[in-house]
Image 1 (cartoon, rainbow, N blue to C red):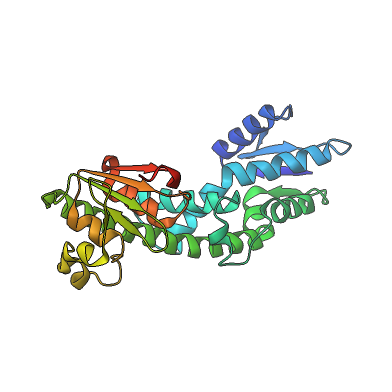
Image 2: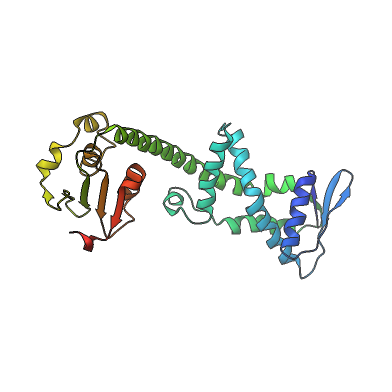
Amino acid sequence: MELAFLSADDASRLQSFFLKTGISLFCEKQSGRYVFSFPKGEDQDRFVEALTEFIIHVKRAEFLDQILVNRFYYENEEERLQIIEIVNAMCLGKREELTALTAKMNEHSIVKQAVASVFETDDAVLLESLLTFRLKDYYEALTQYLHVAIDEYKMEQDYQMFVNMLRDYLNKQKPKKKLVHLSLTDPVCFYDEDSKEMTRDEVMELVDRRLLFNHPVYIDSAVIAPLLSIAPKKIFLYTDSEEKAIIRTLLNIFEERLKILPLADLP
Protein backbone atom coordinates (compact mmCIF):
# COMPACT_ATOMS: atom_id res chain seq x y z
CA MET A 1 0.00 0.00 0.00
CA GLU A 2 1.16 3.51 -0.81
CA LEU A 3 0.15 6.68 0.97
CA ALA A 4 0.68 9.84 -1.07
CA PHE A 5 0.95 13.42 0.15
CA LEU A 6 0.48 16.63 -1.80
CA SER A 7 2.12 18.62 0.98
CA ALA A 8 5.84 18.23 1.60
CA ASP A 9 5.26 19.57 5.11
CA ASP A 10 2.72 16.85 5.95
CA ALA A 11 5.03 14.18 4.53
CA SER A 12 7.97 15.49 6.53
CA ARG A 13 5.96 15.57 9.74
CA LEU A 14 4.75 12.00 9.26
CA GLN A 15 8.29 10.85 8.54
CA SER A 16 9.52 12.54 11.74
CA PHE A 17 6.62 11.01 13.67
CA PHE A 18 7.50 7.57 12.35
CA LEU A 19 11.14 7.96 13.37
CA LYS A 20 10.10 8.94 16.90
CA THR A 21 8.08 5.72 17.14
CA GLY A 22 10.96 3.61 15.86
CA ILE A 23 9.70 3.18 12.30
CA SER A 24 12.38 3.76 9.65
CA LEU A 25 10.16 4.50 6.70
CA PHE A 26 10.97 7.33 4.30
CA CYS A 27 8.96 9.05 1.60
CA GLU A 28 9.97 9.41 -2.01
CA LYS A 29 9.02 12.20 -4.36
CA GLN A 30 7.08 10.88 -7.36
CA SER A 31 5.42 13.10 -9.99
CA GLY A 32 5.02 16.00 -7.59
CA ARG A 33 3.74 13.82 -4.77
CA TYR A 34 5.45 12.53 -1.65
CA VAL A 35 4.85 8.80 -1.31
CA PHE A 36 5.29 6.33 1.53
CA SER A 37 5.40 2.69 0.44
CA PHE A 38 4.30 0.35 3.21
CA PRO A 39 5.57 -3.22 2.92
CA LYS A 40 3.17 -6.03 3.73
CA GLY A 41 3.94 -8.23 6.66
CA GLU A 42 4.13 -8.26 10.42
CA ASP A 43 4.80 -4.51 10.69
CA GLN A 44 1.40 -3.58 9.28
CA ASP A 45 -0.17 -3.26 12.74
CA ARG A 46 2.67 -0.93 13.74
CA PHE A 47 2.06 1.21 10.67
CA VAL A 48 -1.67 1.38 11.34
CA GLU A 49 -1.10 2.34 14.98
CA ALA A 50 1.54 4.95 14.12
CA LEU A 51 -0.60 6.59 11.43
CA THR A 52 -3.57 6.56 13.81
CA GLU A 53 -1.53 8.35 16.46
CA PHE A 54 -0.25 10.83 13.87
CA ILE A 55 -3.78 11.79 12.86
CA ILE A 56 -4.91 12.14 16.48
CA HIS A 57 -1.92 14.00 17.88
CA VAL A 58 -0.80 16.02 14.85
CA LYS A 59 -3.75 16.43 12.50
CA ARG A 60 -6.61 16.76 14.99
CA ALA A 61 -5.80 20.36 15.86
CA GLU A 62 -5.67 21.22 12.16
CA PHE A 63 -9.07 19.60 11.58
CA LEU A 64 -10.56 21.57 14.43
CA ASP A 65 -9.00 24.82 13.27
CA GLN A 66 -10.33 24.33 9.73
CA ILE A 67 -13.84 23.56 10.99
CA LEU A 68 -13.83 26.63 13.24
CA VAL A 69 -12.81 28.86 10.34
CA ASN A 70 -14.90 27.36 7.55
CA ARG A 71 -18.01 26.22 9.40
CA PHE A 72 -18.23 28.43 12.47
CA TYR A 73 -16.49 31.50 10.98
CA TYR A 74 -14.09 32.11 13.85
CA GLU A 75 -11.46 34.49 12.50
CA ASN A 76 -9.63 35.22 15.75
CA GLU A 77 -6.75 32.77 16.21
CA GLU A 78 -6.60 33.15 19.99
CA GLU A 79 -10.28 32.28 20.29
CA ARG A 80 -9.79 29.23 18.09
CA LEU A 81 -6.85 28.05 20.17
CA GLN A 82 -8.86 28.29 23.38
CA ILE A 83 -11.80 26.38 21.90
CA ILE A 84 -9.46 23.72 20.49
CA GLU A 85 -7.91 23.34 23.94
CA ILE A 86 -11.36 22.56 25.36
CA VAL A 87 -11.94 19.90 22.67
CA ASN A 88 -8.49 18.41 23.34
CA ALA A 89 -9.39 18.10 27.01
CA MET A 90 -12.68 16.43 26.04
CA CYS A 91 -10.84 13.95 23.83
CA LEU A 92 -8.48 13.12 26.71
CA GLY A 93 -11.41 12.45 29.04
CA LYS A 94 -10.64 15.46 31.24
CA ARG A 95 -13.98 17.22 30.69
CA GLU A 96 -16.53 14.49 31.28
CA GLU A 97 -19.17 17.07 32.21
CA LEU A 98 -18.90 18.31 28.62
CA THR A 99 -18.68 14.97 26.80
CA ALA A 100 -21.83 13.99 28.68
CA LEU A 101 -23.65 16.66 26.67
CA THR A 102 -23.00 14.95 23.33
CA ALA A 103 -22.39 11.51 21.90
CA LYS A 104 -19.07 10.39 23.38
CA MET A 105 -16.68 9.11 20.75
CA ASN A 106 -13.96 6.52 21.03
CA GLU A 107 -11.41 8.60 19.16
CA HIS A 108 -8.69 6.00 18.85
CA SER A 109 -11.11 3.33 17.64
CA ILE A 110 -12.84 5.49 15.04
CA VAL A 111 -9.56 6.71 13.56
CA LYS A 112 -7.84 3.33 13.66
CA GLN A 113 -10.76 1.68 11.88
CA ALA A 114 -10.50 4.19 9.04
CA VAL A 115 -6.72 3.84 8.80
CA ALA A 116 -6.87 0.03 8.85
CA SER A 117 -9.31 0.06 5.94
CA VAL A 118 -6.70 1.89 3.86
CA PHE A 119 -4.14 -0.85 4.48
CA GLU A 120 -6.57 -3.43 3.13
CA THR A 121 -6.09 -2.08 -0.39
CA ASP A 122 -3.12 -2.38 -2.71
CA ASP A 123 -3.88 0.96 -4.33
CA ALA A 124 -2.11 4.23 -3.77
CA VAL A 125 -4.21 6.35 -1.42
CA LEU A 126 -3.99 10.12 -1.20
CA LEU A 127 -3.85 11.45 2.36
CA GLU A 128 -6.50 14.04 1.50
CA SER A 129 -8.81 11.21 0.36
CA LEU A 130 -8.27 9.38 3.64
CA LEU A 131 -9.02 12.51 5.63
CA THR A 132 -12.02 13.60 3.56
CA PHE A 133 -13.87 10.34 2.98
CA ARG A 134 -12.76 7.58 5.31
CA LEU A 135 -12.58 9.91 8.32
CA LYS A 136 -15.94 11.56 7.68
CA ASP A 137 -17.41 10.10 10.89
CA TYR A 138 -14.41 11.43 12.81
CA TYR A 139 -14.97 14.91 11.39
CA GLU A 140 -18.61 14.80 12.41
CA ALA A 141 -17.76 13.62 15.93
CA LEU A 142 -15.21 16.42 16.29
CA THR A 143 -17.80 18.90 15.03
CA GLN A 144 -20.23 17.78 17.73
CA TYR A 145 -17.50 18.25 20.32
CA LEU A 146 -16.89 21.71 18.88
CA HIS A 147 -20.54 22.69 19.36
CA VAL A 148 -20.22 21.88 23.06
CA ALA A 149 -16.76 23.47 23.35
CA ILE A 150 -17.93 26.72 21.75
CA ASP A 151 -20.81 26.98 24.21
CA GLU A 152 -18.41 26.29 27.07
CA TYR A 153 -15.96 28.88 25.76
CA LYS A 154 -18.70 31.52 25.59
CA MET A 155 -19.80 30.68 29.12
CA GLU A 156 -16.21 30.93 30.36
CA GLN A 157 -15.85 34.32 28.65
CA ASP A 158 -19.08 35.54 30.28
CA TYR A 159 -17.87 34.18 33.62
CA GLN A 160 -14.53 35.98 33.29
CA MET A 161 -16.28 39.26 32.44
CA PHE A 162 -18.49 38.74 35.49
CA VAL A 163 -15.48 38.10 37.74
CA ASN A 164 -13.65 41.15 36.37
CA MET A 165 -16.68 43.32 37.03
CA LEU A 166 -16.84 42.11 40.63
CA ARG A 167 -13.10 42.69 41.08
CA ASP A 168 -13.55 46.26 39.88
CA TYR A 169 -16.40 46.73 42.32
CA LEU A 170 -14.34 45.26 45.17
CA ASN A 171 -11.34 47.49 44.47
CA LYS A 172 -13.55 50.59 44.75
CA GLN A 173 -15.02 49.56 48.09
CA LYS A 174 -13.74 50.78 51.43
CA PRO A 175 -13.30 47.85 53.83
CA LYS A 176 -16.03 47.73 56.47
CA LYS A 177 -14.07 45.12 58.40
CA LYS A 178 -10.39 44.18 58.38
CA LEU A 179 -11.04 40.46 58.78
CA VAL A 180 -13.99 38.16 58.25
CA HIS A 181 -14.19 34.46 59.11
CA LEU A 182 -16.53 32.51 56.85
CA SER A 183 -17.72 28.96 57.40
CA LEU A 184 -19.15 27.20 54.33
CA THR A 185 -21.50 25.07 56.36
CA ASP A 186 -25.25 24.77 56.00
CA PRO A 187 -26.24 27.43 56.75
CA VAL A 188 -23.27 29.66 55.93
CA CYS A 189 -21.89 31.49 58.98
CA PHE A 190 -19.99 34.78 59.17
CA TYR A 191 -17.75 35.74 62.08
CA ASP A 192 -16.15 39.12 62.81
CA GLU A 193 -12.55 39.96 63.71
CA ASP A 194 -13.13 38.71 67.24
CA SER A 195 -14.52 35.39 65.97
CA LYS A 196 -17.98 36.39 67.13
CA GLU A 197 -20.74 34.95 64.97
CA MET A 198 -22.71 37.57 63.08
CA THR A 199 -26.46 37.18 62.84
CA ARG A 200 -28.17 36.98 59.48
CA ASP A 201 -29.64 40.44 60.04
CA GLU A 202 -26.22 41.89 60.88
CA VAL A 203 -24.78 40.45 57.68
CA MET A 204 -27.64 41.64 55.48
CA GLU A 205 -27.44 45.16 56.91
CA LEU A 206 -23.96 45.40 55.40
CA VAL A 207 -25.00 44.20 51.94
CA ASP A 208 -25.01 46.75 49.13
CA ARG A 209 -28.51 46.34 47.69
CA ARG A 210 -27.31 47.55 44.30
CA LEU A 211 -25.45 44.29 43.82
CA LEU A 212 -28.61 42.24 44.20
CA PHE A 213 -30.74 44.70 42.23
CA ASN A 214 -28.38 45.00 39.25
CA HIS A 215 -27.32 41.34 39.14
CA PRO A 216 -30.09 39.29 40.79
CA VAL A 217 -29.29 36.10 38.87
CA TYR A 218 -25.51 36.01 39.13
CA ILE A 219 -24.76 37.37 42.60
CA ASP A 220 -24.95 34.83 45.40
CA SER A 221 -26.82 36.64 48.19
CA ALA A 222 -25.61 34.33 50.95
CA VAL A 223 -21.84 34.57 50.39
CA ILE A 224 -20.61 36.73 47.50
CA ALA A 225 -22.83 39.78 48.04
CA PRO A 226 -21.95 40.11 51.76
CA LEU A 227 -18.23 39.64 51.15
CA LEU A 228 -18.16 42.19 48.32
CA SER A 229 -20.11 44.67 50.42
CA ILE A 230 -17.93 44.23 53.50
CA ALA A 231 -14.79 44.16 51.32
CA PRO A 232 -12.56 42.85 54.12
CA LYS A 233 -8.82 43.05 53.75
CA LYS A 234 -8.59 39.38 54.75
CA ILE A 235 -11.01 36.47 54.53
CA PHE A 236 -10.48 33.18 56.34
CA LEU A 237 -12.66 30.60 54.63
CA TYR A 238 -13.29 27.33 56.47
CA THR A 239 -14.39 24.29 54.50
CA ASP A 240 -13.84 20.56 54.19
CA SER A 241 -14.42 20.59 50.43
CA GLU A 242 -12.31 22.82 48.23
CA GLU A 243 -14.02 21.40 45.13
CA LYS A 244 -17.13 23.54 45.51
CA ALA A 245 -17.76 25.79 42.51
CA ILE A 246 -18.29 28.84 44.72
CA ILE A 247 -14.76 28.51 46.10
CA ARG A 248 -13.32 28.86 42.59
CA THR A 249 -15.36 32.04 42.13
CA LEU A 250 -14.30 33.43 45.50
CA LEU A 251 -10.64 32.75 44.73
CA ASN A 252 -10.97 34.48 41.36
CA ILE A 253 -12.62 37.54 42.89
CA PHE A 254 -10.76 38.00 46.17
CA GLU A 255 -7.43 36.42 45.14
CA GLU A 256 -4.78 37.03 47.79
CA ARG A 257 -7.33 38.33 50.30
CA LEU A 258 -8.76 34.82 50.64
CA LYS A 259 -7.19 32.04 52.67
CA ILE A 260 -8.74 28.58 52.77
CA LEU A 261 -8.55 26.60 56.03
CA PRO A 262 -9.96 23.27 57.26
CA LEU A 263 -13.33 23.48 58.98
CA ALA A 264 -11.74 22.08 62.13
CA ASP A 265 -9.62 25.26 62.45
CA LEU A 266 -12.69 27.46 62.87
CA PRO A 267 -12.13 29.45 66.08
